[in-house]
Length: 142
Image 1 (cartoon, rainbow, N blue to C red):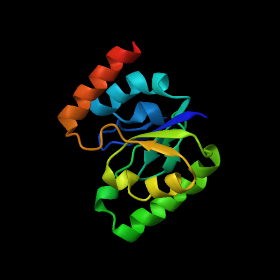
Image 2: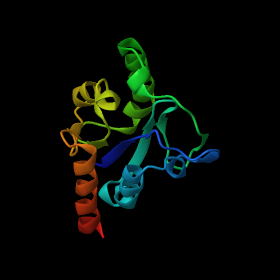
Image 3: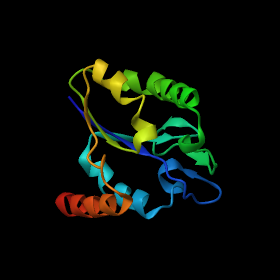
């Protein structure tokens, strides 16, 4: 059994081409970066533009968001993510999702059907409370 963390992309990005983990430039993402490798066995970014990303994958800045997509477009996006992600997990694995509702909505059920345990520790937290939670996690994992 392994633990995999899925981290959503953010709207704040550097301009240019970078490793995915270096492109996103929000305070939230920086705090996630400080703990994510200590929380699980592996982690991935779920990007509105690119789907499932390896943190070291080279990408350029973009302006796509799930918030502006219609439901069927988000379903298609989730299917693209699942095609790449489902082979990486097996029954009994745990997936921690650090992602908003639209990034999780069509992923969670498919993962549960596969026997994966889902945790969404920041599910009902405002952005400010998420930042506080991330600070607490940094203390735990430092």
